[in-house]
Structures are given as structure tokens and as C-alpha cells.
Image (cartoon, protein in one colour):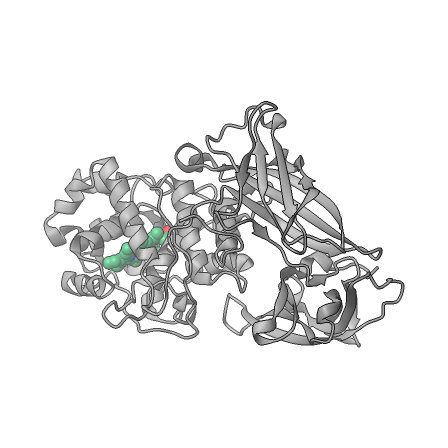
Length: 538
Ligand code: HEM
């Protein structure tokens, strides 16, 4: 099902489809190209690290108990012997944590990371669902290891919901990328191969998601250290033989390999605690507002800026210069008004395009997205409550109207408006405290709501001893009515302000400005502290 905006999965959808170009979110940077050495470490292949992280996190699921799965509990389980080789997990979570916020969990980011690796490395196109919730403590142990018997491995996979065929396919599909590190697994690597630089690939193409591992195994010319290494640690051999090579023979067909890998990766990504309800597979919005911001000028005009994202149906951008993208809108009373149409113009930054245009994303799954920017000024007395988007692809064509998935338009709220120009985080210490900066937040609230309490909630990313991912801590600051020095009171609005010592961990985070309480809350949400960093308040 298409998403309706705003959706709880908007951040997920952006990170998934805005990989490159205009408005890029950049998840791909940690794994592109597929051979990329992650975290500046020439011994760690980013793509392989992210896939191994997926496996070690999810495989401790217990399907009948409804516990575990892809929930980032691995963050709390790194000291376990079964999770040896933690550098790979640290570079994975270290990179993904830059995208972590209260809108997306580390577990969802791990799933998106898997989707991205498969795209970059030439793997199958998988469907990705959203809604995973992060664990707050370690879960049960149970990652199968290289010395385990066939029975134990079958048992571990079965507990996580994977039958023998799926177990074999998971291992063959996982080990198509990456290597065994001699320093972490000297017992597998064998004598004389115990240094950091001793990297033993599973197949001849460690940075390509292909079935070389299968073909080389069946042909008896494999160098997979978990097949031809010391007998005690030959777990891949035991796994592959668990059904007498039936599955491995089947996987010799590249198409069978690709489709079966797609299946088991979707299963791994979607193995979650029974308390988690995953969304439908996330597909790109045909039309989506990008970074829309309502503001208010001292003279009392509503400003509305941002861009409209348009998914190109056939990836063909020919004739785009003739496109007209407009936004007919309704006023505060939700009625259409004469002349109430915002015009956009094609964005120029990055050519005005974004999407998934990474090389191997290109052929089979690329999405190209064109951006059209707007910068409107609307009298505050009439304001804006929602808009549609119309698209004319040539002077003679009829406009197509997009009404937000049949919901009657893209909704906006003008009850509480964060005032970016009047707000700031200065470079100064807060009251002499070097761990904090001076943060001033100013907001305008409609006069009808001026008697209700106003607050802002900022998310502080707090480092934790021994953890690569920060904890998100919400801090609430009450705001006071403010008559405004140098800011005239815009007609119909009352100004509120608070000054606060923001810990350094909040400087690249997000905050919400909220009027009212409980059922009566109105929120200007997910504003970026980075937008008001190191500047003066006007
Ligand atoms: C019986 C099951 C498995 C065992 C015993 C096993 C064992 C191992 C071992 C010992 C390594 C070497 C790690 C290192 O030196 O850094 C490794 C690497 C790896 N494993 Fe597995 N594995 C299993 C299943 C899987 C599955 C199901 C996946 C994913 C679907 C997977 C993905 C990977 C990847 C991508 C690497 C390479 C990591 C890198 O290059 O940094 N493994 N595995």
C-alpha cells in the first residue's frame, strides 16, 4: 500500500530512496563500492560487515517464544565469545548511528543497510518493511559458531524459524561477501595466518553478490576456509552437506541463487519480536513534500518553503524542463481559494535529481526523483491548511493531480510555528559550562491557543561507556510568553521563547515545539538543531 503523508515511516522511506544526489541521506556511503574499506580500516569490508551484523543480531530469535530477532540487541552482546570479531559490528553501527533518531531505530537501519548492500553489491532486489524496535538490553545467546555440529546448527536456525534449506541458503548467500579474519579466527585460518592482514575470502569474488561460492564448492575448487580449513571449524561444509548438497546443487543456477537469497534475506530482516508489528513493504512516494517548513515573518506573513519530490515513472527525465509542478492549496478554513496556488521551479543543486543512482542500483531497481522547489509567502490571516500537487508534463497536457493517496491533500499545521530566524545555538558556552551551548528557541502560537502551555523537547544524543551508539534522551524545556525585542508581534500570533543550555550531544539532533497537552497537543516537529547551529538570533 502507498504511504500517506505524513507517515511514521517517512524517515525510513527517505533514507531508503534518497541515497544520492539532491537531498541525499547517504546511507550508501558506508558500503559503496562493495569492496569499500569501512571506517578507514583496510581489513574491514563495509558491505560484509553490515551483512554479518544482520545475521548475528537476528539469529538469536526464538520464534515460538516470540523473542529476539532484528532488534539491535547485538549492541549489548558484543562481549560474548559467539560475537568475536566485533570490529565489523562496530563499523556497522558506528556508520548507521549517524542516521539514528527518534524516527528510526538501529534495527530498521540495519534492515535498510542490508537493502543497500544488496543493491551496491549486485544482490537481489528485496522488499523492506519498517517498524522494528530496538532492544534495551541483551537477549539470549545462541549464534551458531564454526565448531558446532550439524545438529546444533540446524537447531539454532530452526529456533529462529529457518528450515534446513533456508539455513543452507542463508549461509551460502551471506558468505558470498567478505572474508575470515586471521587475527580473530586463527584456529580457522591455520598456522602462519594470524595477522590482521591475513584475510581469507570465502570465494574468488568477495565483493560481488554472486554464486561463485556455490559453483566453486560444487566444482571442488573452493578456497572457503570454512570448507577446506581445519575439520573442527568446517561449519560451511557441514551446513552445505546437511541435505546432501541438494540445495547447493540447486543454487548453481544464478537465477535460483538470486531469488532464494532474496527470500532468506527478507526472512532475516523480518524476523522480529512478536510484539513488533512491521509495516507493509515500503515503496517510494510518487509525490512527497521534502523538508517543508512553515515560518512567520515579523510583518505577519506565513512563509512556506521546501520542495516537492516527484518520482519519475520511467526514469526518463527527457523534457523535464517543460514540466510544471504546482501546489493548489486550501486556506486555514480548509476551503480552496481563488489564486491560492504555489508555483515551483526545478531545483538546480545536483541537477535537481536524487534517488538510488548508485551504479549497480541502476539497472534493476533505480529510482530517479526530480525536485521542484518553492518559496511562498501567504497572508497569515488566511494561511494554509493543506495542498495538492498538480503535474503538467507539457504545455498541452492535462494536469495530473496528486491528493496524497486519496486523503484529500497534504496537510499542514499553522497553530504553532517554530521561528528559525529568531532562534539560534550560539558558539558560546552556557553560563560558563563548557559542556553546553546557549540555545534560544522562539515560536509563534495562534492567539486562540496562547493560554496553553508551550514547550520544546530536544533529543540529546548521550554517549554511553562502551557503546558505539548513543542513547537518545528527551529533555523538555517550558517556554514563556515573550513580547519580542525587535520582533513585532505578528497579527494573530503570540510569541514564546526559552533559553536553554543544550549539551553538546544535542547540537546535531532534532527538537519539537509543542503547544498544549495530551489530546490537545499541536506540534511543529522534527526540526533540526543543525539548522540553527553557530548562528546569531535575529
Ligand atoms: C552456521 C552459520 C554460520 C557460521 C558458523 C558462520 C561463521 C563465520 C565466521 C567464522 C566468519 C569469519 C568472521 C571474521 O573473521 O570476521 C564469518 C564471516 C561472515 N559471515 Fe558467517 N557464519 C554463519 C552464517 C552466516 C550467515 C547466515 C550470514 C548472513 C546471511 C553470514 C554472513 C557473514 C559475512 C558477510 C561474513 C564476512 C564478514 C567480513 O568479511 O567482515 N554468516 N562467518
